[in-house]
Length: 180
Image 1: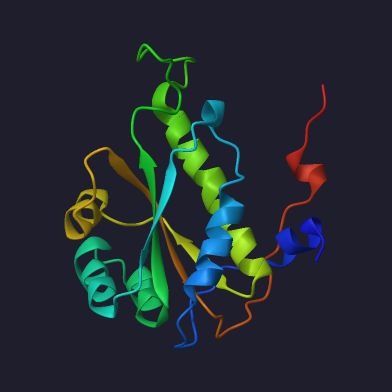
Image 2: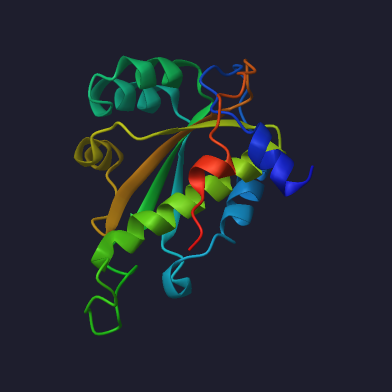
């Protein structure tokens, strides 16, 4: 499929079939996501794939801030991808100073690009995804006993789609672009 078509057809999937995703497919997705650009090519994004249903349930119960929409999504997900960033690298110079007025915000920018690339690659391979932004970062960090240098940037539920959502209405270029 052409890239522009893939971008237009990809949907957030919130209902998944019960099948597990083979590790070879997950690794193929991560290999593709590794090509996402990052601040000075620091490549700080990491992916923790949580497949253990009991651990996913614990994250759902304790780490989703009682947001039932995300909790329900996790019930059928084959896995939960915890997108992490290595702290204090994106946006910094070697001496530890900030490179721009955006300071450390480049970390989330890099994680966002990597997450989008991950989700597009997953879609290409028939894997559904949904990015979930409402979660308790400290609680997720604690539950998973993550390294101190890792920040939890995003959560992505993944699995084989058990729904085909229709595309939402999108604004066109006429509303989104300005030329000067």
